[in-house]
Image (cartoon, rainbow, N blue to C red; front, side, top):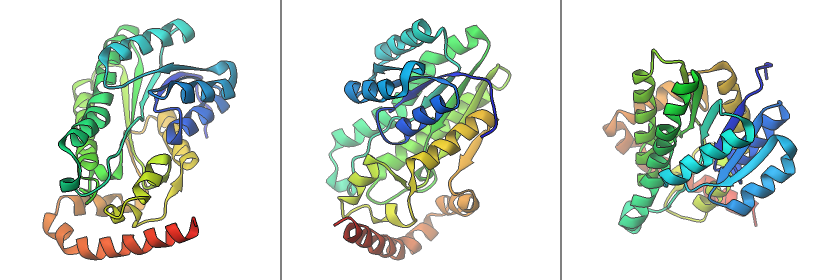
Length: 271
């Protein structure tokens, strides 16, 4: 990774998975990190393992009050904030008919409104200091409506639209914007998806490690890349497919069968 100015990062969902990998990599490269997570003990353990360059705070990203508290803590501990990495997310697996309306609502509250609340809380602070960078960890499902992940994909669609709309609104401001769309990644979320028989499309492609995604995210932060697709060579075809409902319906049966084969192989390998 190219050398860059040492920065202060606030990473949501930093207690595990991609967030934890990003925090570790950021500290390795000399940055300071505030690890925020609803899992207070997990965040504290991660921060303790990373030393003086890391701190932790409990954060429920669906609470604007807690966002303000987390930002205040970042200013108090590190003297400011350079990069907000919105990474935290949840998943409720299963066909839409088998997921409660309350669970669909929670998915939107966390995966869409959570990052939006964070950006809205941070925006005036970035504008006041004359700099800042919003980094949004989104998903390739922002382009593809996945069976078994209906509200997850819908929330990611919404998050991408909001991120880019805010970027357009702030195009003359000193704030930078980057959005990254990871592919299937080995995290606790993928483990949960593997326990369901109703999300086989999530296993169409080989998964990557959280550490690999962390490298991609930190590189995008360093280069201030506007949007990053994973894998990049499939970006155009996935975007086109996502806008063609007839093609999606035509491919659905084959996609589910292929994903199911890969899922069964995964389960066999883990037994």
